[in-house]
Structure formats: structure tokens, C-alpha cells
Image: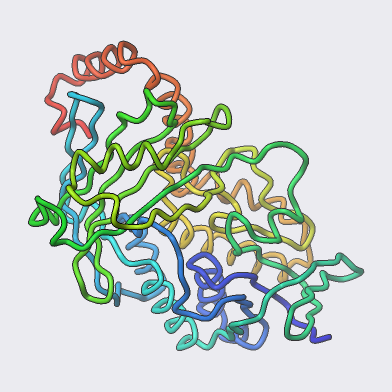
Length: 371
């Protein structure tokens, strides 16, 4: 059994960011970290692929600028039936194809000196004196600290989780070539449509411009947060109905689904010698944003790990405070509060109209200006 200071389970943005931040703090961490990934990059990964300016800032903190093809979005449109608002920025969001982005980030991590073992699946975890035993399909490890970066369905979150229902959203998505989209020239706009709320969806329908293998595409999907109950809405029928409004050949592509573990201030995100990052800790609950926050989780985890080894205290009790009282924490808490309120009122057209027009009255401007 190989002894190592830190085992990071999952080579996605959160796990790789944590490793790179540690190496940037002190190059000696190169020999003290191993990242385990059960797949081989470029791996299939379902994701809308949006990266906000906050996420681009996180890449900048790692000394990186985005090195994969992306769609640059300058307009974000939010609508609820006839109500509409548009947020403008340059960029408001950039959209990447997630397998390409993860593969590029893996290459940057390796260039930094991080050891990543692909095709190495974690089969079990066992707490022992002085660390955690990590059993894998290709050799075992005794880790001083384990970082759970293996996402919503990963072993680390399930191993650590207390009893109770986790807040797990449902997502269904599909890609279409740009030539199938009537308004394909509208590549600088993404759309969030909250109309499906009246069909029981605690979320929205989206349209993102995207780029895959240097070919322009559009990504469509439905996000159902299920913050209040396990929604019975049929996402396939909801997505198909929404696509019929935009496409003439919506039935020709195959829908793909995936879950997202959502952030809550009460999520369990650490234990003795273990820390969770990325979707394992909780994605942003209003829109399900993951990539930008995963990179920020990695930075926070690196700070806590460095502190733990410097002081010999491995409880990680300061991790929650480090998350909540940071720029990322304010971002997450605000989005969580908005999601709790918004997904309650969207079930009633009257409630949404009252709130919508009340906000307009308070700030005395058109919707184009206030988002």
C-alpha cells in the first residue's frame, strides 16, 4: 500500500484546481499528491458548459487563460411566458464543450507537475489510524487526506453523507448542429425560459450556443432543481414540447440525463481527514452552475489542506467558514436564497407577475437594465 499525503478522487475541474493550487503554494506538493480518475480523458461528460467571468477569474488565479474553443455569449435572456429581461456583458458567459475543457485542464495540471492516474477506479474507503485507506482497481493508498472531487454520484459523498435526502437536481440535455437551428446566427445569446414551472418543473428550459470539435452547435436542456419535493414532471415530454417551439426536427437527437448535487448551507462537506469539492460539495442551486464554482472549491480546499498539514489538525472544521465567508460563499448563498424563493413562486403566474412588476417599480428601470 503506497503512502501519500493527499489523494484526490476525480480529475475534474475541482480536483485538478485543488492539486494545482497546492503545487503553486509549494512545488514540494508535486511528490505528495496523486489524482485518481476512473475514466480516461477526454471522457464523456454531460454539462451545459457555461463558465462565468467568476470562473474565468479562477482560471486566471491559476495562471491560465482558456485554451479550448468556446462560444462567447454577450446576452443572457431570462423569460417567464411574456415577461422578459436581458443581461448584457462582454462576456456574460463563455460556453465550452465539457470533455474538451476537462482534457485541457488535465494537461495544464500535468504541466504543473501533478500526478494523475487515469483508468484507476476507487473501489472502497476505510478509515484507519493516521489516515484513510483508498482501495482502487490498480493499487491501494494510505492517504493523510482524501479530497472527494468525484461529483454527484461519487463514492466519497455517499461514504460521508449523513442520513436524509440529498438535494439532487435532474437535468436532461441534447445537442443539435447549428444548421438545424433557425436563428443559428444568434450565437451571442443564451436563453433561460421558466415556462416549464407550470408543468411541475422547479427549474427552467435553456438554450446555449456551443462548440464541439470546432463545429458550432446548440445545446438545449431542462433543469429541475427538486428543492422542495421529488418532482413528478416528465422531463422528456417537457423538453420535447419546448424544442417544438424552436426546431422542426427536435425528435431526431437522443436526450441524455444526469443528476446534480446542489449546494445548501447545511450540506456536509468535510469530515476527519476528508474534504469535498465541486459537485460533491454542492453546485449552485438556482441555475445548476458547476464549472466556475468547482474551480473556486479547489482553491478553498487547497488552503485548508495546506493549513491542516502545517498545524497537524485534520478535522477541517474551518472549511465551511472558509467557503461561506468568501466571494464564492456570498455567491452561493445568494443563489440558494433566490432559488428557494423563485422556485416557490414560479408555480403561480400571478405571484411571478406581482414580484416582477414590484421589482421594476422599486428600481425604476426597464428589465433590460436591472439584471
